[in-house]
Length: 267
Image 1 (cartoon, rainbow, N blue to C red):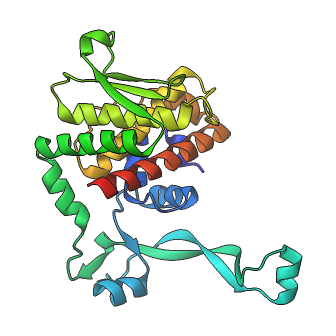
Image 2 (spheres, rainbow, N blue to C red; image 1 turned 135 degrees about the vertical axis):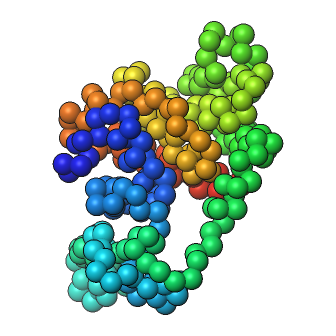
């Protein structure tokens, strides 16, 4: 809790988002726990899993990162009746278990498709391909329409999202392809978080911008494109309020998950 309330400046917040980008499949609580104990962590597993699945050993004297793991119980017929369910098993609580980052282990290298993708996306031609794939996917598989206009018609913006028509418009003549992709992620985040039917559409404007920028930052981190020049300006105001920062982070995580799954499929 204390670590999360320290996310008052842009750099601290980026470190948190880096953890989110690496562990997006984990629950918000476990992302908070990993971030607060080891913000540099990249890949984690339990002692036995490192040994059995990856042929790596945890180094002597290493201190584990504690995360919450569900306790699953087989339900008796009485339990099923009481809980009004036909499921055979249910989560009855959580316990804290130790896991270790890859940097705390030694052994065989762990190969990842991510490394291959990052290497290839360093080439901007491939970034353009991903931008086009994402644009086509949204046009063909969702109710969002993505189109392009010249930057001179956008009044100084790189792009925008129009909630009334559910339309994203991107500057067609933006010379930096990575910036074009980042803008598409940013506007897609607005469509998911702040569209007409969205739960979060009434958030203040600065709050909305920071959320959309955070999702775009996570999406670009996920594909390994440099995003060091991002400004995430509104965080200081959030972090003063425990309830606000938790709901803001939870909303960012929900949409980031969606964007990462989508991008990983397309890449």
